[in-house]
Image (cartoon, rainbow, N blue to C red; front, side, top):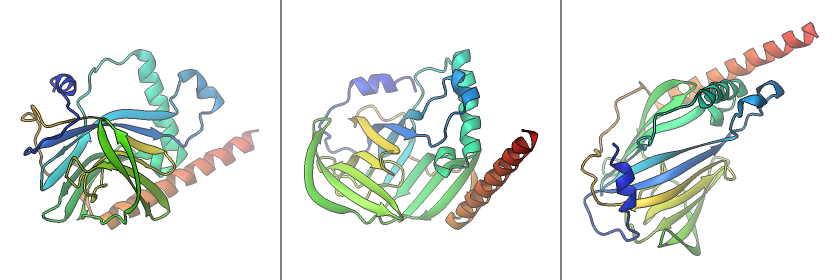
Length: 251
């Protein structure tokens, strides 16, 4: 796993035809919770960022967390993380409490398997590969040495913006996003609340990474997962309302 740093040093801006490729992204999410007065000394971050890697070939793709560069965590970092977890859970916000840990897509079979963490519980969701209603507006730019093209979509009420590179001729992207005539290098959604930016593309030295359908987490259907999330959010909001009423009575 420590070879990842060396892989990033060898990244080239020109993807040649290969059996397998890898894109490393920086994933940034802006939290929706407000930090109360008593917790401001904990330096709770307003956003979370981490590296994720997307492995892909002609038929499959899989996104997961990149290997951590260091496992050393200071006492201050540990306290901040515990307070942040408390704030996220108490917010009752789905976006604050949900993370896609693994996203596997098999385009030949039209199948997607996601492992999602919701409030510290892992679920494995198997479903048909979604069709994203992309619209191309002809706008172009440059990113990591590639010519990139803009695409937009509305998923329910959430706006999504993506920039893809035709020079990487694979219909891949972060999480469930793909279906464009080139790999997505930049993606943002919900007015930038969640974003992915590629930091490198590689086709070299990938033998250590394997594409495999995930089998971790409790297996549920998409409908079962959505119901579980909805029920948990209602429970958190109900408990929060009860605590607020109790505090008012004490005052």
